[in-house]
Length: 336
Image (tube, rainbow, N blue to C red; front, side):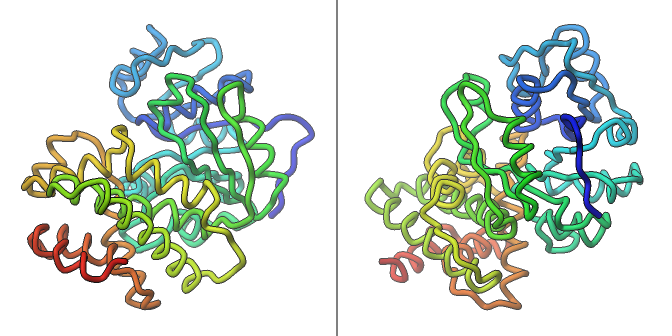
């Protein structure tokens, strides 16, 4: 089903975390109203009263006249034409099951999730199509390299907007771009989405090595090997012409693997220093998508058998409880 608009589409955002908060800030620059769903009623009242999210990126101050924030998911869906979905992948299907929303097959959905839907070992685009009934031409994604914290600080950043329908991609790109955000578009929805998931796994690997005391010299080899793994995996799963040196692939990997803002790198660092997965998760109090992605990619790769030793090493550390010291020592002999 094709969806077109004579004027700017109505915009909704689903999710209450850091990235959702940053995206609402961006969308408010170019929209008269942004419909915003989150489940935390106390946070909703705080935003309505004071204009900022009390839990995530509190420095962002919203123009309260431009945002309609509510815990009524169906209302936001009904009042929006384009929906940006920024619910962590670990909670997306649970949220859908709990609220049982209708009409998502009639909307244009842009994923800002960057994670695997573990119940189906599925990337978000496939989940939206198979489980929600949304046609692929109405499914897009928003990917980096871009950290929510730097959006809050209005530091120059770049976003890549993917959609098979380039007109819809350009509409979303225009809604997000501003003085400090530059945007470009791509038709490679599956490749950029898989790359956005994989880079979180490699950021966990970078963190584990940092926690173990490996230096910058080894990290350079690790990440240069990681981009080759990403290319190998993408070519095996979805072979089209793409340049993985572009910012949506390599740039997103670099910022996630090296930035102090990266929760996946932070999570990996804690595991490398000896924290259990459970305690690292509790200590962070935030979702590290790379933890769930490591399992999802492992399951997907059972079918495709791509050569991804770094990603498999992360899986074994996180899920098979193999010693990080031992696993990384074995991995160092496989890299070049």
